[in-house]
Length: 153
Figure 1 (cartoon, rainbow, N blue to C red):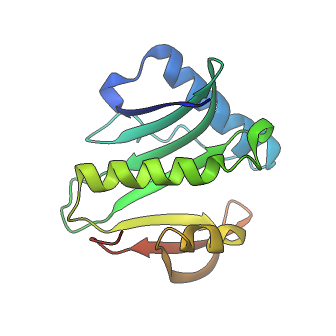
Figure 2 (figure 1 turned 120 degrees about the horizontal axis):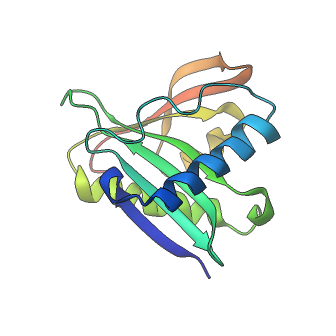
């Protein structure tokens, strides 16, 4: 059983913030062997939101939603992650469903964008995202820009 939270950054407890940074580091930096500056200053600003999935008091799924102050810019979904221990349990689908529901609830008129790892393009396509860039290198990992227009179900 997963306990889900959809939190504005101001609602994050110190424990939740520590857990999300720990999970992101474990997967994106250590597991994927990709040293990069994960703590980028965007986690605790503006109207940004965090989707957290907890199992037995451990954070096992997470996504970050960034809302630009520029009304012409899309909402950016990033740091989409499922812990290695629960991959294959369809948790990614639940995470993206909840993340998109949060986006639509808070910003129904906005387009959404994500920089997907290229091998996950078909996964995000199932949620209405289409490629808007070619494949590009980000920190040594092939990525592709994908967008979803407002009003898509």
